Image (cartoon, rainbow, N blue to C red; front, side):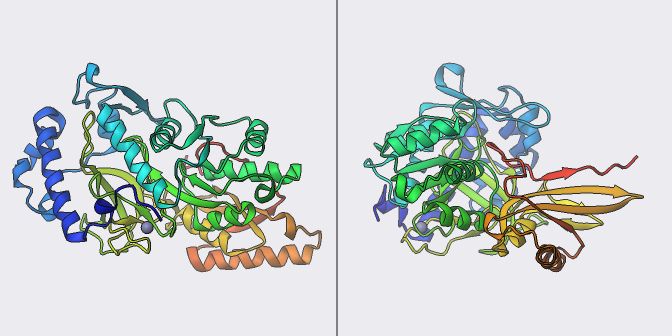
Length: 433
Ligand SMILES: [Zn+2]
């Protein structure tokens, strides 16, 4: 398999970490001098950029949080004047102000290179043709993937989101080899293809996909691959970093986090560093940002990191699939429940699809959790005894995993809402008045 920059991508861990520490100090010095926000943060703990001689000491630098970004709306955190910027992206905030991120040309170049290394790592090249159905516009997915692909010579079809009929026509009529988009939209395309009797394996040349922009599970990946015959590579990022930027290689065994571009910490509840492979909260520092600082940013995602060398030969750390959000944890009858746990259980049953909805209600302050999940087309039956048996087996497994009871309703295929953007699986109807 090819490399984008073999020497850099296979450097020994010790050298990479030494390089990271140097880049970290540089970035802190630049931001300390140009950003009042970073200057004040470091001053509050009595640290100068030059004091950071170890990762332990770096952990004394206070966190940046989403509220810091919102509070500085629209551009108070920019460290470059507008005439040095070449682009702005704006995140879709569900509450409060959105977050506006500015980019210099170097920022855009580093972002594209990050994706280019990733795309190369699973075999994409200038021979490929990419149908990009990420939204083009203020969302970083569309333009981010677009420019990275063009930079490496991939031919891009910038079709953007929606108009599924046209998407399917294009992927049949043109020699499209690859997709980029959200996994839920890929499922939607697969559904429509099924309805039209189109077999993606037979009727198209699509071989791989880049999927991201929303939380999704390993079992969803397996189902998507089985249904379509496409090898689906997970992608992760956020507009606060640059945009989507870390991809899985051909091994599909974690996202390669380029150590010269980002320093990712995984922390436990006490703010201590988790062991290799242990799950905790992600804290991200960007090492070469120019227009917008990102130092010890709490993105709110839960995952684990490993420095174990990848099967592909790359030595940079790998980030495992995001397994939850620090803020999407549900507390049901006093028990912590992550939608990802429920997703995991659903994935264990071959007769279920990955489409589900969690509804929380309460009566007399007693919480109830109901899970609607679609049954697969092949497992449809009118036999109430089998339906009952299937329902019980899912309920019993959920009870084992969650430690609380959930009521399961099996629903007809296609009955639950599909989302083209971010999936939203939880309906919390509990009232406390
Ligand atoms: Zn790899």
